[in-house]
Length: 110
Image (cartoon, rainbow, N blue to C red; front, side, top):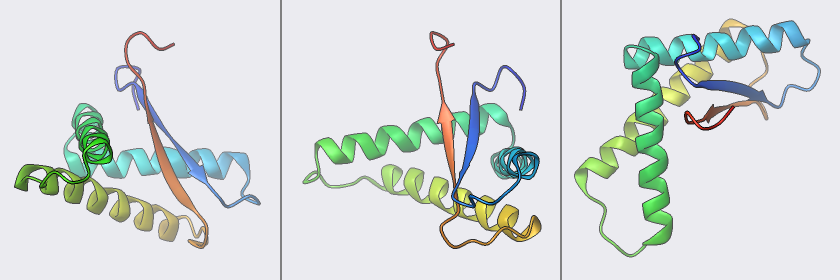
């Protein structure tokens, strides 16, 4: 992850995992997402689109979902699941209760 990406990941769960292995898993998760989406800015863009759609749906749950909204959500959820499963398996981290969370910030956030 470069400084321009403006995001990072946290591994949730796996309380007994050593800090260096946790950091390696978080970095690998970002690398897998970047491979799936084609780069860091594409990961950030896809995640921001996903959050926007989820937010709109939460505010207006009765509105019919568009095909585009369905595709945005499905694309992100599929990629995040693939990346998570891949990293947990590769690094031999028990998947029970373990998940990754992406944190995105804007240019005003330090």
